[in-house]
Amino acid sequence: MTEPPTAQHILTYAEDLRGGGVERAQLRLARGWLAAGRLVTLAIEDISGPLAAELPEGLEIVTPSRLLALPNVVRRLRPDIIFCPGNFYTGIAAWTRLRLGKTCPPIVAKMSNAPARADHTRLMHAAHQVWLARHGSFLDHLVAMTPATADEAALATRMVGRTSVIPNPPAVPIPGTLPALPPRYILGVGRLEPQKRWDRLIAALPLLADRTLPLVILGEGSERGAIEAQIHALGLGGRVLLLGHSSDPLPVMARAAVLVLTSDYEGVPGVLREALSVGTPVISTDSSAAVVEIVDRPELGTVIARDDAAALVGALDAWLEPTRQRPETIPQPGTDSANRYLALFDQLVRR
Image (cartoon, rainbow, N blue to C red):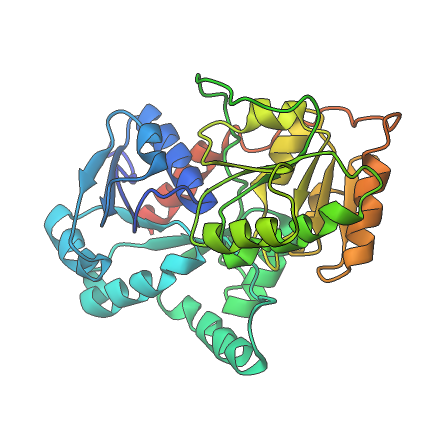
């Protein structure tokens, strides 16, 4: 009896390994797929970056000069399925489908950001909604990470019935040296990019009841210069520590008084789940429908409006009270995510 076909060869792609959450989750999934005995190829323009240390053993790597050459990579390697790791990369998925037509293998994409973004103007929002509505024409299936984000994604992309909910794989401890840390501190974890709006958190520091408590930010990115200028302008040079990229933020999270996320928009912010997994309370802007799914009880943290500076200061003061009780640890979901993706891939290949 002939065995049903499976997705033995998975092709995924990225621009670089500078340290974004999309690429970090992509590498965790790839590690799980390799452990299940599948062949996994990563097409990537630039193999350098902080996440290079997290490349799983056995991962095949090809380095096209541009991701626009992905259709040629697919023709040459003939993978069984293509995995698009996030919204930023769906344009390449559309281009690949256009170039390959009926010879293109199934494409599965993950919805990594909210369909509506707070940084968009009205015109940009309208154009983005038109683009999302086209996704069903070149994607075979869409994966979101929570039920609420899946509902949003299915409606925006017109892929109702072709959308699944699979959380990202959980963060795992990575051996390394813990950076020098203050005895007590506020923590931010994420890239230094406009989306994260670290300026909101830094601006709140001089207004806190405790005018001495430091802020630690783990992450790197294009906004470092602007953030350093703001720190200098507010006279906070000794209070804000920009420690750069961390391959394993969990130990730093476990020691923090509170983790704060002040983004304009997010998909499903993994840092909230990671902080809660080590018993650290969280404060987050309402940057995604997933935030209230994660912070679903007041004893876990506080969700505030994006531009409510007073609410941010109030939430910080409340959680920084010395007698405030920390939440119970909540295990991260997603331990079986790699296998759930494989089941989906196999189902699409059989079709």
